[in-house]
Length: 143
Image (cartoon, rainbow, N blue to C red; front, side, top):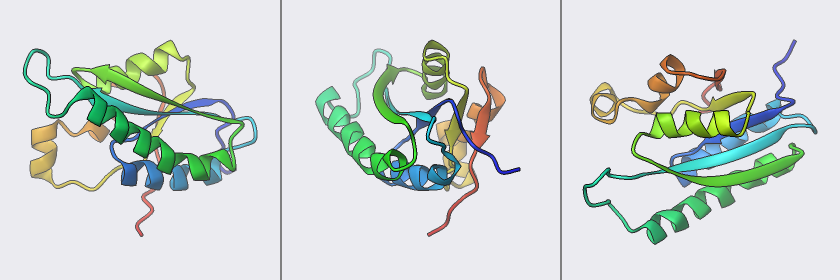
């Protein structure tokens, strides 16, 4: 039996390419009753200076959402977007998932070497290990 998402799912996207790739990988699993919420987390520095202005990061998030919408809108009942703010990306994603009563968090793992994972905390690994709602890692779709 093939996997189908009939309810509400939250889809974190880190950058425009990630958003577009994840949306394309997710689209075949959607049904006409699917509700997709694409989110981008703007990580706050927690007292330290931010890497970019909030306006720049919000514009970047809008680019992510624009690129993710196409494949999703063709298949889902609705596609929503949200910019989230937090000092911990994974915690922020799960807080949003619980607040929005989603059925699952769905993502496509991104490339990254072990050194980068060590520095960044490997968000994909943490999504699975610290899950407060079901988490689905989509199969990689290499271009």
